Length: 103
Image (cartoon, rainbow, N blue to C red; front, side, top):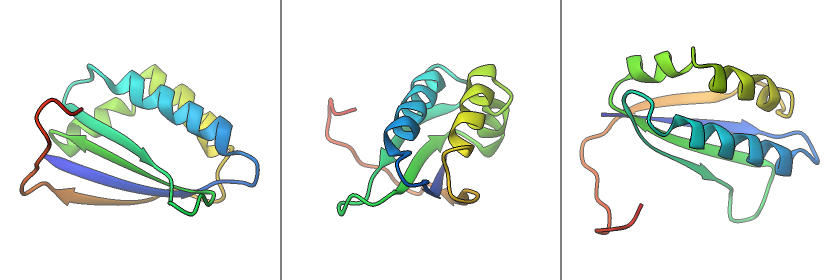
């Protein structure tokens, strides 16, 4: 299992539109081969920065998702609202813990 952490900075005034497009992307990932979970995080101080946490069975599954039409549609919308490129980092998941019944 792999987790990818993606950091982005948004253009001023773009947060609401960007967040909605990312919600659509995460919802579209449900049912994709290898998809486990996704989170969109906003810093507590409410800046224009965002962090996306995606967990997949493998990087190959994540890469295959990039060929999906739903992914491609949101990619253009999101990139137009960002200040510069994404910054991504991959991690092997060693252990995971969740409260029972919490999604």
